[in-house]
Length: 527
Image 1 (cartoon, rainbow, N blue to C red):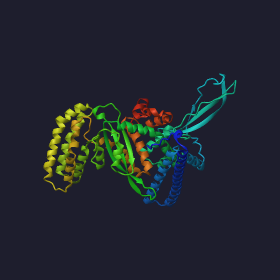
Image 2: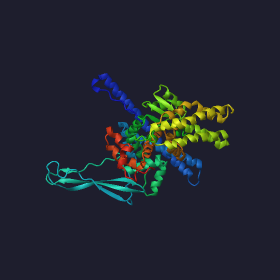
Image 3: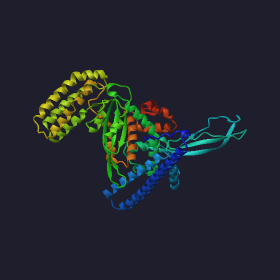
Image 4: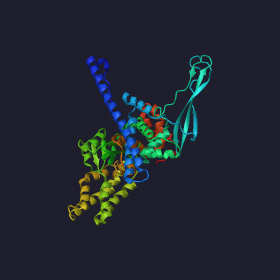
């Protein structure tokens, strides 16, 4: 989340300092105005290009052409979502947004065939607040919200009767309820559905627009992109609260995965990274809620995990990526290695060559996992005792066998590389035996990345770095909801119905485990 610079105390500034401050602010606004104009021009250029490609596509199918159209569609989604996310961040962006609203054609009325549900919102006063006289009807204001409940759309009519005092003509009317996105027509359920469809079910916005059109509801892709950007901005404080909860753990699982991202200007892709940090101590019976926080970076430099973990103190369970070395340097964070990574190398060798060495290594490692299955859920102290009594002798025997086997193998063979990988990290692999809070492997982090991998297969890439950051934020909320046994769509629906009016200093109340009791049994089924 971006940090805003604090405004200096204006009373303490002299004439020259005030003048310099005004000039600096003016230059900053002009710079933002230029950026917004450039982005708007790029959006219009992409729309024209997509239309041209679609005309070329008509009458003759081309896989290469379809892929190019999909790439441009996704880039357009991300640009429009970025524009929506930044609306309200500055006077310039707000003004630009109003100009865009004027340019856009008038909003179509919501389809007449949809079921309608009327909510009458009466004022709190039962008599005139000025003179105490009786109130009489004076008319009403009606607005409509397009909402989505599982399997169908509906329209909620918000009716706010106007009442007038019979004695003094004072007019009384309830305030309009706040909406997740100011002046937006989407209800919290529809917004949650769009987010979960994009980030959990891997449906890009232009495909969602096609699906909704089949149901008789025409929603422009640009409208959906505005909703995604608006929700991302609204959810920023909650994502920050989630990060604080994850980083306050005593043990974390970490991993990362590549994400192809469209590079600006040339239409080609570069490789960004999504990092995952998982707090989950349920295997040793800890009652504190599990959670996952994601972070996006444009590359895989080692400085990124060091920045992410700047507040963390404890044990980090991760793979052997050298970028974590800087995290371990000062001893504030201890390293625990992953047995699953050791096992994976031998599994690949056995699948390729049915190697006898690989087979024996897999059998020895499997014996360790049998013990882990038996003690899952027991206390940390009991796990430590069982591991020392049963797992440690197996590990010592495995190490001795590794060292003896190395002398019989070619120094350049893949089996030799697999054994040396394990021996190089042996102390870190043994650490789980002396600490019952740790796991034998880093599978908790790898499980959290499954949604990212599936999404990557479906729509191939993110449209921009800003799109990667949005994805990281929503992946974290969806993943944490699942870890706590909640349906992520039901959870986000509840959050989006509250967050606009929720006090920022109590934002933790909207984290998944704090809302679990309020969600119905059907809503708590994890997707």
